[in-house]
Amino acid sequence: MSQENSALGIAERFFDAYNRADTEAMEPLIADDVRWGHHNRFAGSGRAGMLESIAKVAEKMPGRRFGDIIRWAGDDQQLYCEHIWSAIPAADVPDWGWRKNVPVTFECISCFRFEDGRITEWFDYG
Image (tube, rainbow, N blue to C red; front, side):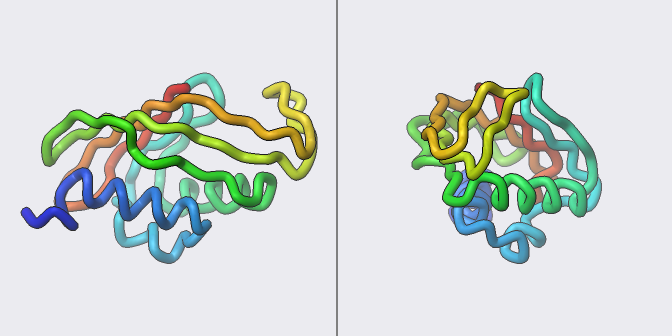
C-alpha cells in the first residue's frame, strides 16, 4: 500500500479536507456506512450525515481545524492520531460552554478504522 493510500495517508488527506471544509474531497475517503462521533457530544452513522455534520460545524466555527498529527499508532486497519483541535465560535455554544469569538482549543485523539482504503469509523476523544 502506498503512503498516500496507507491509513496515515488517508487520515492526513481527510484532515486536510476537513480544515478546508471541503466535503467533496472527503467523500471518496469515507465508506457509505461509516460510524462517527465525538465522545460525549454527538454520534451518527452514514457518510451523508457525517458530511452534513462537518459542514454545519464549519458554518458555526469558521476556521476550525485539526493541527498537525503529533504522534500516531496503528496499522492498515486502524489508526490513533494525537493532535490539537482549535476554533473560534461565530456564536455562543452554551451546551459546551463556548463563547462567541473566544478561541477554543483542546487536545484530541482521533480513532479511525479502515476497510478497502476508506474510513469506516471516526471517533474523537478530547
